Image (tube, rainbow, N blue to C red; front, side, top):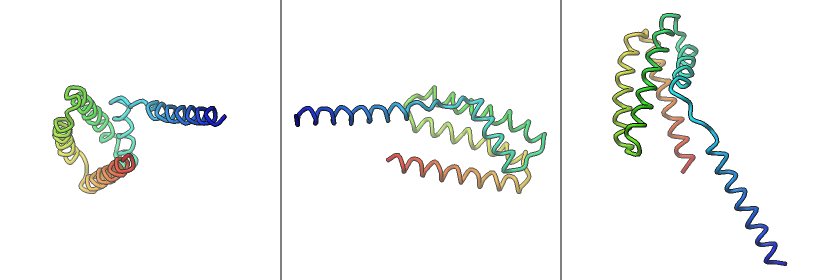
Length: 128
């Protein structure tokens, strides 16, 4: 009787663990287009962009996220190469953004960047 009870308990425990793993894998990654649209909306809300700025940033954000996606696909598991390429893409992006935004808006954008970085670091720390 004890053996049966232990086997049932082990089975239930293993099933719950596998179910939890499947739940985590179920969230699909957003496409570059979806990420660009989402980020443009966040910028519009937080930076109070005008119509011209919105249109320019839609194109710039889409280009940025496509380049990042392409870098991740082309470098595969080489995290250092991906990081270097993404940093290069982001440096170009922020220099372009500086020319489009007012000084106040650019300062807010840099604050948004810092906040996003802090949240990402917190998520990474929570995973470990």
